Image (cartoon, rainbow, N blue to C red; front, side, top):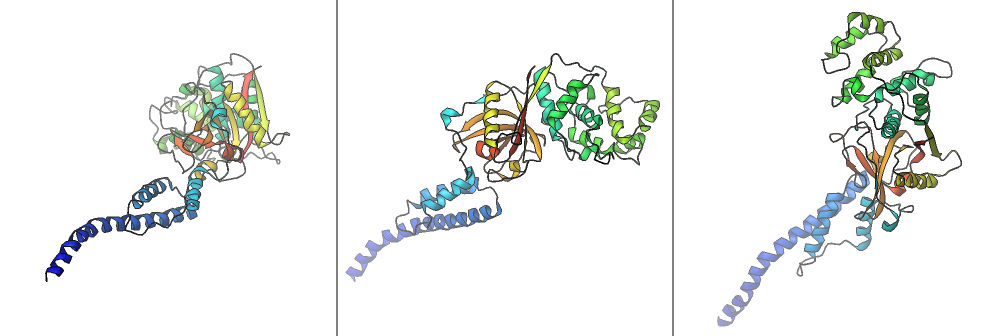
Length: 382
């Protein structure tokens, strides 16, 4: 009897220990396995794993402290795979930190990161960034895009006019049109919409192309107020505008609004590096480095899906943005470029696990940009 009591006394503290430690370790183990499963599912879907991977690392650290319980069956190869998913598989064109000097372009004279909505005018947003930076004045994206499209740039081979709101363009050609324009450029604040709802303005320009609606009908249907571009238009002006074709109506409207058009202060040279001119994507990026170091922003033509899909995406160029900076990301070990985009600012900013968005600007790793770029354009004094 005494021996049994003695044995119970010995076991009792161990029982308390088991009650306290094993359930905690069991939970850590179960949570860890669940995290591994979720990470694998997200990788298969191409979704973000940043937070999951961070939690898994914490779980592994805690699991290592559980001496009396089963370990997470996760090896170094799996950890390396997850890190690659976050930071990108291909770093073949990366720069070391000492070779990735930080550059940041002053964007205070560029238009804000407005939302182009379904207007196919990304090239115009970026081209206006370049000329606004050079002249230190914020010019109207819409005015200059319409200038481009009304210079016979939207005519097909059959000379039939296409819907200019769905027609892209070339930043270099647009800049040439700007330099050749005798009437000067409209300032952003002349549109009477600075700080307003640019997404709604984009939709308005789409509606202006409707051939079966009069301008007066468009104004009534959209309940435009005094803060918007249709304020203070007389009935005679509206009638005169309605006599124009849809593609001319919006440009004529802005001509009425822009009473203080600006002439350029100097002549500029349009420079270009493109992989169909004997260059390669590699030399385009190297030229971007050189131009950024001189404090000059660049327009780029590249695959826009890259920003939404992450660094492993490779596609054909279908989008245009402005390169405004470069820095080394110590967390990912990659040299990254800051891309000023035209999909809105804070509300519309979407990050992936490998490409971060800040106020409508995207940090894109060097190799990923190289794999998706076609052309870079920039301005210098002539």
